[in-house]
Image (cartoon, rainbow, N blue to C red; front, side):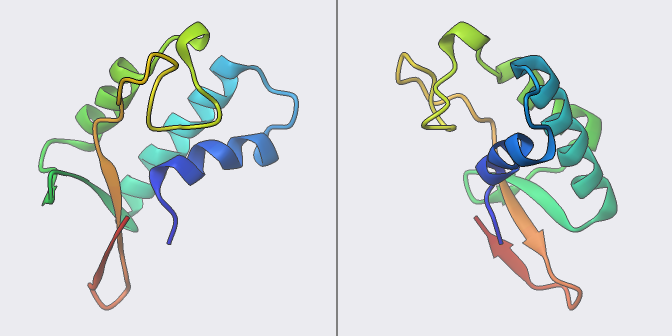
Length: 101
């Protein structure tokens, strides 16, 4: 089970040569589809988020640092060293078990 940061790093593989904004949109689309399918949920501070999927993805989009402040070596923080991610993934197994990342 991978963390939400792995979704971002996979955009390099899925979209070779794509610019920052294209990769960001692919990330948002994949995140939405994973949440919508029920394969994963988002969590914050050890609690699963209960707002709509649209609101959860919008929170990522709003919090996302600008390209000039993006630290591609460390997904979770901006170049300024500020943590920006609003939540992390909890993968849901077919039997209902949760795997927190």
